[in-house]
Image (cartoon, rainbow, N blue to C red; front, side, top):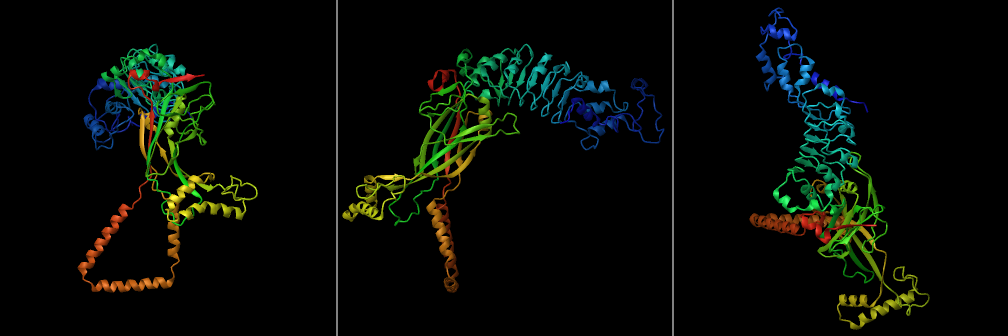
Length: 623
C-alpha cells in the first residue's frame, strides 16, 4: 500500500480553500482600499481603479460572500475551525497570504480517515498547533520529535499503533490529553511508558479497546500520573476481572471520571480498602452461565393413536446446550468455588478433567474476525444442561461457572457471542426376552427386542407378558402398561437426538462495562413428529378425493346458497358474523406458543470491598 504522509494531506486541504481565487486574495475583483502602507507590506503597488473596466468590490462585501449561509463561496472546513477565519483574512490581500502566516494561523487540525500512514516533519510548520486529531488512519509509528512543542491534545484513536516507543522517545511534557484507543497496544513495555516521568501534565488518557490485561501493574503505572483526572479503559481485557472497577477507583483517589462515568462519593466509600489488597488482585475472569425455564415445547405424545403398540416404549428428554471457550494446555489451572453451581474450567490449565466436570459434546474451532484487530481465533466446547422430561414448563435452574485466565481470548469470544441450542433425545426401549422361555442361544441385548431368537420363543415370551393383563380383564390399560414396565426389564436403543432450534446470543455488553446479559431466547414455534405425520396424512387424504365427491360437494353448496337466499337477510347476516367471531376466537386460542429459554451470562464483580473476603468470590491458582 502506498505511503501517505500527513504533509501531503494537509497541502491538499489548503489548496481546497482556494485562497487565491474569488472572493479571497487580491485580483481584478478587489477595490483599492487606499492604504499604501498595507500594500507595501504585501509587496504590491496600488492598482489604478477600473483600469480593465471591471467593477470592483468592497472588502466587506467580499467577506459577506464567505459568511452568508446561502452563498456558493461559503466553505466550512470540518478539518479545522480556523478555516473560515483564514479565508476572511485573505480577502483583499495578495493572492493568498504568505505561507508562514497560513501555517501559524491553525490551532486545531482534524485529519480523520484520510489514509495517513506517516507523520513527517512537515507538521512542525504549524508552530501554533495545540490540538491534533489523527483518528481512523493507518499510522503504525509516531515519533514525538515531529510534533509541535505547543501541542496539548493528541488523538490517535483507531490506528495501527503497536507500541509507544516512538511517542515516548522525546515526549511533549505539556501534553494534557492523549487518546490511544482502538490500537494494538497492551504489552508490559507499553504500560511502563504510561507514567508521570513521560507525561507529567497529562489530565485525560484514553486507552479504550486495547489489549491491556494486567490490572494491578496497569494501576500502579497510572498512579504515577499526578494530574490524571479522566481515564477510559472500556473494552480492555482487564475490565473483565472481578476487581474492576473497584481496585482502580480506590488506587487513583484523584480520578474524577472513569469510562465516561462520574466517580461519586458512594463509589469511593464502597471500594475503600481495595488498594491495600493488592495480593488479592488476579488477572482472572469468572463467567457464570445460567439456564432457567424453558417453555413452548409441544407434547411429543400429542396426536399419538390410541391403538398404538405397547412396544417399543418411547421416552423423550430435553436439554439446552451452549458454546463456551475450550480449555488450552498450560502450566497453571484456575479453580473456582461457587455454591450451588457446577464448575467448568475454561481457562488455560492442565489437561486433566475433574470428576465434577462433564465431558464436552464436541469442540469447534472458530477463526478470528479479520475486520477486528482485537479478534483472535479460538475453539469452543458445547456444554449441556442435565436432561429433563417433558413438561409445559421445564425449569433447568442450571449454572456453570467458567474460570478464564486468558482475558484477551475471553474478550474476543464475548465480542463474537455464543450459540444456544435446544436438543431433544428420543429413546426406544424394548422388553428383554426371558432366556428360560426362549430355546436356543441367549438373545443379544444389543439388538432390538432380541431379534436373533426364533418366532416360537418370541411368541411364548409375549404371551407370558400378556398373561396377567388377560386375567385381570377389566383393569385399565394404562395401569397394565405401568405394571408391565415395572416387572419387565427394558433394553434401550441408542438415543436419537435432534436439534429443535438454535439462536445466537450477543454478549458485547459484557465488554462495554456491563456485567450481566439476561435474555429470553425465542426459538420459534415447534411441531411434534406425530403432529407432522398427522398433517401429512390429512393432506394425502384430501388429495385423494374423487371428482364425483367434489361434484357432490358443489351441488350441496348450490342448494345451500338457494336456501340462504330464501331466508331473511338479517338472520343470515347475524349468523355469519357469529360464526366468524367463533372461528376467530378459536384461532387465537389454538395459536401455538413459541419455544423460549431463559438465559443469563454474568461476570463475577466485586460490588464492595467486603466481597473480596467471601469464599465464593475467591480464585485460587493451582499447580
